Length: 219
Image (tube, rainbow, N blue to C red; front, side, top):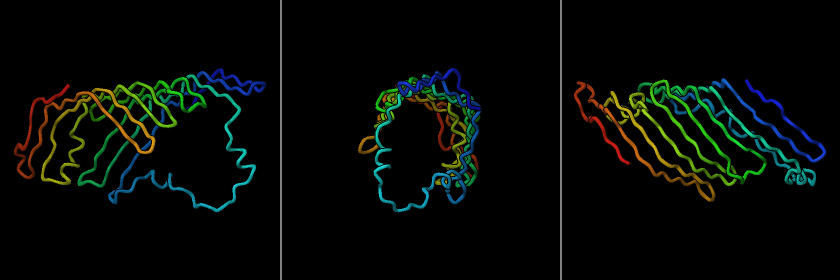
């Protein structure tokens, strides 16, 4: 469902003002097959290119728009994503639920930093929160993030893929500041702390304890 209300278009001065565009109830799946191909890859494959000479008309269209567009809020509410990776000995399954994404004060000025917030829960255990500012061009973001109680057990097939070990239990949490930017190359910096609690890794076969602890953390 997409909703928008009380938008204003002024042809006299080429302005469009929208209070909000809200997309609610989005559902999608990200599936990785045994051959490591993703179901989304085909959708984003570039179309066959055709050689065409640039025309004056096309060059004119590439000029900056004279329109001024402002959008107070662009939001996704109550979204869900089902992720399944079948490239491992047993499928890795994660379900993102109750996701919220909100971008405020948008416009055609892509160099302007925009307030952003995001939040979602994992059915298998865990909750993610982020808020801060993002610039679209060139891309840059400064975010305060918090990942709380992420269940590690669903990731056990990744360990079992390289060793005869089984991740039976564990919860991870992360909090801090994440800075990302993309200019000549993509770069990121994180400062914060983490914790891994109730970790249990057992051997296969036999189920003997290989590694475990009650709590490990840093600030």
